[in-house]
Amino acid sequence: AELQRLWAEVTERPNFLGDRAGVLERLIPLLPGLGRGDEAMLVERGFPLPEDGEKKSRDQLCEVLRSRWYLTGSEIDAILKDREFFQPYLRNALARRAELGTVPESPIDATDANGLFVLTELGDASIIPDLLLCIRMREADLNRLYGDVLTEHFWLPFAKLGHASLHELWDFVADPASYLYARHAVIDGIVAMPHFHPEQRAAAVAFIERLLDDPHDIPADHLAGILCDCADSGLTELSEQAERFAVAMDAVEDEGSHMATADDIRRAFAEGPRKDFI
Image 1 (cartoon, rainbow, N blue to C red):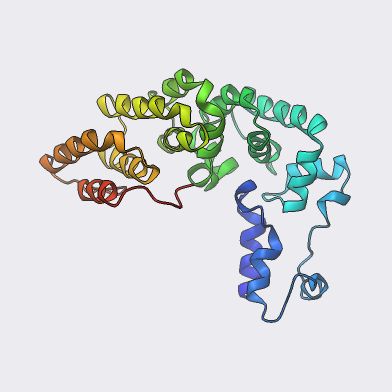
Image 2 (image 1 turned 90 degrees about the vertical axis):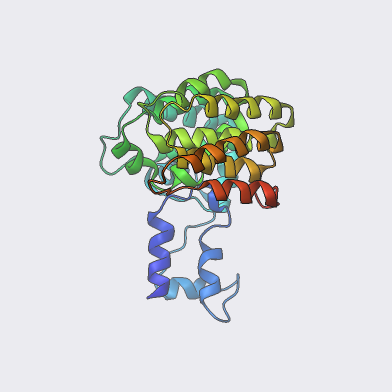
């Protein structure tokens, strides 16, 4: 039963490049005595393993991108190696989704959702405008297409590729009409950006300072959570402004903080950066 549950989780929930280890690494620990050479035993137990990505044709890899919510490590490697074909192919898929602005198809075509992380891996910063259009979709469409990936992994393209589009990122974050957790994804990318682009540290700090001065309807407990992330990321330049924000939170009647509290902010900055932040 546990194996069936895990298989369903791996195949049905999007993880894209967030789990490069692939399916076997999730299944093997649950099978005592089973090692990497025992794939046949998994098949005998009813788990059809994807064949080696290196052996798949372009058409087969395109079908994987379209129809599956996960990619195995070998499939990712095969796609990255065939950059000349897949980079424009995936860029066009993302552009089509941005132009469409919705998710009307059933079953869902996951090409663009998978592809945006491949394009991030390839360092293709040209995707940022289309990506921002995609996450302007209504909440229901975002949940259908991205699921938990929006809150768990979507910061990555903005952290790695957004440094040349800070004005566009600000315009998105400052728009209260955009879905709150999509705005969070962009902000989380800004907070993590100095880890990939150290020269952007001052710009990242200035971005968060500007947000604290004018949060554009982002709730206080969400801003508190963002400040905790800043502390975890090592943005110590924000410590004084974080304390002022915590004092202001203390002065307001607590209406129930779901993301973080004033005490959480103080604790995060007192503990300092987390080594496992990225």
